[in-house]
Length: 139
Length: 146
Image (cartoon, rainbow over all chains, first blue to last red; front, side, top):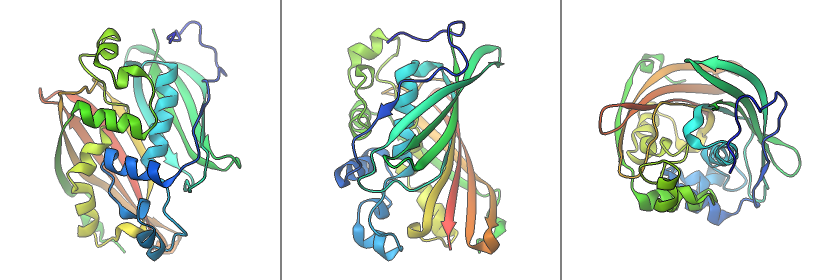
């Protein structure tokens, strides 16, 4: 991986997309265990239905972890200073999520040269699931 | 409606020993393929003391101890009604396998929209490592669907 540098990065530069396979139940079960999010609404259809949902649905933090992969695929993790998201929609079974990012600002933060990257994820129908931003200190 | 008296409530501390096996499991669960997250040699070659915890992993410390789930029980909120609204991290130091992360959380704000149809619980947390050094701060908003 070639680390982007502050001087070479341009406003409007796109991060390489990260495309995920469709969400299935096994993914949700694995993430429940690995993340510590044992909320049964993500892994037990009976609980999900009792709560008024049609079926189990993805943990929000699974989608945020995928956006984390988008960022660390572009710049090494130790350059990441801030990572903020808003969950805009529920990710359902069968949703194939694509994560995208764009450099929108160059700025100084705590004495470091940083870029602000706008990030989002959407399913195969273009429905936005997460929007957010990251601050990355570039060499 | 959730009682506003909980604003400022200290949720408590959660401690997570960051184990290599757990990090590999997390990497598998999120489909991470970069070798630095699963292979110690690749991690050290990249300058990390051990396998680094991915950016959102520190959130697991809050969940593992069940302090966050216990908070919603105290607030009288069923887990079936909650959705994650927002989440933010600010990073100060890397977290790697072998570290012990302790997170201290408090309720920052409670508010509602649409005449109480949706309630929001905002929490703020600070994560420190075994040396007492701050590694990250976390901000979360949970949405309660009434």
